[in-house]
Length: 556
Image (tube, rainbow, N blue to C red; front, side, top):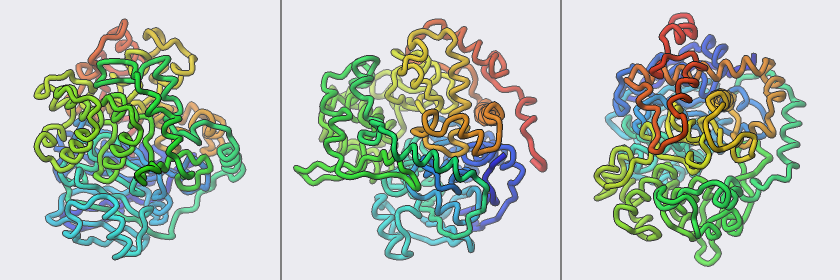
């Protein structure tokens, strides 16, 4: 079976030491990407670790397809113990860094410890350099790029960094790459901040050689280049009006399910501001959204649909330029736009200030710098909702994505059982409900669907493949050819990844009591029972230790 190659580079920033660790056996079992990083994190991060403690780790890695030239593969994975959910969490980002990472010859990097000084860690195929960068304290993301370019000749595609939000331990701070691409959900940027690591850079020409069928790569590439897909013009915002009209667009901090101002922020509105094409590394799909407001000259990349919800409808804002400005602020400061927008929306509800764009932008700045009310909001909705006097719209501490489980119940159930909480990408059950493949209302038969979609997503993030490419472009047959493996065997690996995440979280005290929602779904408890039974887990939502023992490798 195809899998990534290369050692784990374990970097202790407190001791300023770097050690290569042989992970060939882990790679042969877990492929790379989210799979490898989850196995390493499960085995190497103490179950009782403090998310902001030196014993926590951030793993960055690629999958085997980042060695290819195939579309939909310009992505990387990040994994660690989340300060937002208090559980094990993976997130990934696009852009152009993955090929530079692969060029160092490693399969993964592990960042542990805590530095006394603000650091940049430079990784090449010749070794590791630790650079003290006190001049970057408080620097925004573009300023980090400028520094690295002037001092090291490195461009944005070589850099993963944090903004002020990460330094200030905002629980939903991102790791940013290529300035506008985010390892978005779960606050791993704050974990780097707790380690006093401002940036990690990658450069080299020592990528391993892998045999990946060339014709299959070209077929995917041609399909991506020639497909007449609305997402090439509008990104994920293409479905905004459809979702608003037929399902639900969370509005005014989830108090309403339809937004009367949708025309001002929908796909057409975003497309009207798009001024050129953009893509991720090696990808012919070119779905990114460089946008510009000609009247003011303001430019950013995006917003995508989730940001249109969080800073648009959920904040009561109907002007796409205002949403663009919120998006740009989050990119510069290093904030997850979903969690940031939802948390700001909670604050707007408490102040009866929906639609106040100036207050929104001011509040985003305060969050990133933990100033005034921003210090409270920087903790996230689950930790600040009582002080604000609003409902807790989160699961396991993770603020909700745009796809409302009250309207698409399978996705709602997915939020409840997902190891990282209220995030839509953990299973993307929403796709089969929006498409009408299954009835969006009710939970009959949904546990099996959610389980299958979770396993699929885990393999997607292990390969690593862009979510826009799965199903329609990188099909089951394509995956079988690329990996020289039966698709069911790949899904089994995905299931192992889910189980390791859940087991880690169980050891931190999480169980069935955490698989909950802030609203009711029909026959929810029975669906939970069915889901646990299908997974082979205990009735209380815990994974038997014996199940995880089956995934052990030598010398664990």
